[in-house]
Image (cartoon, rainbow, N blue to C red; front, side, top):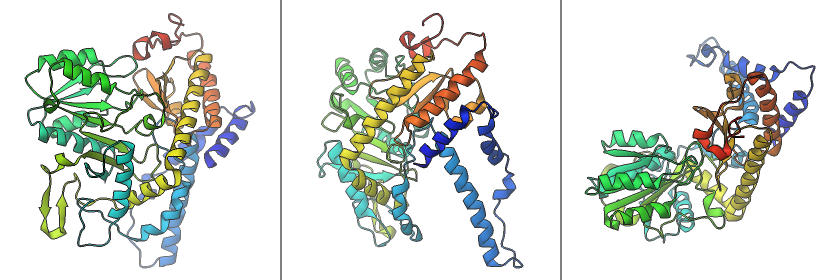
Length: 451
């Protein structure tokens, strides 16, 4: 609601010709220019009373909160949902140090954990991804990268001589994982949509036919929101002569993992297919206020990684030792508040708003692309870095994108579109807009050649 009110306020000012056009950057610039010394950790001074110290700290925190409240009204380019008010009901839990150290399914000697909540969350995802609770294992991670780390580690332990295949549009954690695990890897080309090119995958699989394949499938690529065709990848593996014991598939569902399951007539990803693991983020679409995620794999795979740790009286199966015990409670809470119906409504709203933005961009003559069942709208990169910072856009080469999360309203999009069109006229003047045919396809390019 706060974001909507702020956006409406901006819209009213933006059409007032008496206001300087760059007025709305002032607050952001003022905060950025604040001296770093203002946030330095200062040793308590015995001459300063405790009450005065607390007042000073509270003032700094309040100013920062006001800064965040202003910036969230212009938060468009990154995949995080800022509809978080319902989490305030859990604020009293912050007085406790909750640590879910070790395996979520194994009791620990220390009682300050939330593993019952964690298992409840995991069982919900097991139902979503169609695997019996007796056949899966998983845990609440610290984010999507940790989920990818664990998923690919499972593949490497199962297939020590395997090659990691991942598309050029995969999350940057994939190249990091290949380096960390010292795995041989192949980067697969992508189509203009961002989807894995299975013809290139076939060529590279045949080149390394004598070695197992560990494949990362994107359920929503980082920049274009593309969904790799899982069924086609499996068919390609079979066509190349790979039996099921010669490949392992990990699904990185950080971006669109909450979109695909709630859209009808879309190819599903779940454990009824020959996949080994799935990871998803909890702070993106669900809006958990601290980075977190969920990793699920097949229970029979985890035995090769687990070992008993006597002094914490549990089993070591996770990437991290100590784990955030608050995030499972927050995930449990929002899943109970929303339920499948609430999530389906959020997905439908985001898809509608994403199509609205795409259509308005095209109507304005701006190159833009929206993949089917995606909430990520890609368009030409603005020429003004201050504009990019103001709207907190994510950019790559000639492209920028908006991720239409549940907190993004039509009013916010209208403000953004008005600002973009007005500024764009200034940037280009009599110049021609750049061609984006190679980036997003000829059919989505609005340059003079392809319009």
